[in-house]
Structure formats: C-alpha cells, structure tokens
Picture (cartoon, rainbow, N blue to C red):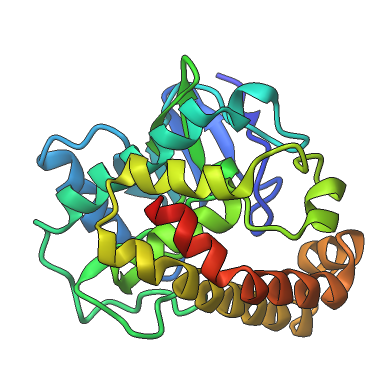
Length: 264
C-alpha cells in the first residue's frame, strides 16, 4: 500500500503519512504519556481522538486514521459557519469531561510550549486550531495532534481555541486572513455557548485569551530564535511582530466589550 502524505500543520509539515487505516508521524518526546492518555480516552468511550497503535522501531508514532474533512487556509466557507464554531466548543467540552475522569500523570514530561502558566489538574490539548479538527457534515467530529498537551485549566483550552476559531484578530489582521467579514463578538459568544461556559468563566475569558496570546507569542519567538524555518517564514509572511503588537493592543482595548458580548 502506497504512503499518502497528509498536508497541514507547521512543526511536522511533510512528515505525516497515511498508510491505510494508520497515520505515521514523528513521535514527540513524551509520546508514551500521550498514548496512555489517548488509550484512556478510548477506554471511556471517547471516539473523537486518534487511538495509538505503536511507536515504531525508527521512533515514529502510529495512530488510527480518522476520516473526515480538515479545513486548510484559505479556509472554506463551511469551516467558518456558526454551526461549525458551536460544534468545536461542544467537542472541546466532551473532551474535557472525559479527560477529567483520567488520572493525570504528573511524572510525564508534558510540553511547556503552550501550557497554562497556572497549571491545573486537567490535561489540556492546548492546540485546538483549525487544522487539528476533523469535520463531518460541517460539524466537528474529532480532534488530533496532542503533542502540546499539558496540565491546565479548562478555560485555558477554550481561550486557545478562541484565538484560532473566532478568530481573535484585529480588523487589519482579519482582513489579511480573509476573515474580516466575521462578527468577532458574536462568534466568541457562540464558542462559549457551544462549550456551555459558566457565567464566571465568561467574565474571565477575555483576560485568559490575552494571557494565552502572550504565551503563544513567546512560543513563536522561541521557535524563530532556534532558527526553525517554518515559523520564521510564517512570521514574516503575516506581518512580523508588528502584527502581534497590533492584535494584543486590540484585545486589551476591547476587553470589556468581549465580556459584555459573552454575557449578553
């Protein structure tokens, strides 16, 4: 059976292959801990994440292939609907509810790249970006790529997802991405509704999104400093650090408006 290269992503671009019902990809350093968590999810009936098969002798991981559609930039219209957005929130809530029942392996070397600075007792995915969600019939059906998972608060995962899915972009950045026609305030509320976020978490979410954005910026800066070409190129193509400055200033200026939209 011939290998099929799977597109998307940055860190593993060009290194992910499908062979029939199995996906083979570079194994992260903590692959065994991630695999244990994925197996525990499956054992509890969660069918919306890959199931580990093995770690090959060459150090690559093999997981079950999940059929469906993945939205890649420029994002298709079906991925930008409110139905799709609501379903992402609902899927993330399902993941958290099952994960809460799984004892957290505190001895594992979880990734610190996008981890919640406050930590927590739940294993957060931390990277529920557009490219890491599998869709069927316009609704989120599964989430993949748990490489950046780490202990944190549920609201941290919601904040990270909001950055990608709302998306949390200033008007100029949204226009460059082709998503300036989207209603940011309404979409933030839709995501929160899909997750069934509590009133207190809705009050806190704008601040946590700003914290998550700062952590994401530090993550990109570290990758650029290490000379990783994909991140260096993406930074240059998307407006450099001026874009990050603009987004962060815009978020701070609209913090109260976001809170009002979430509680409307």
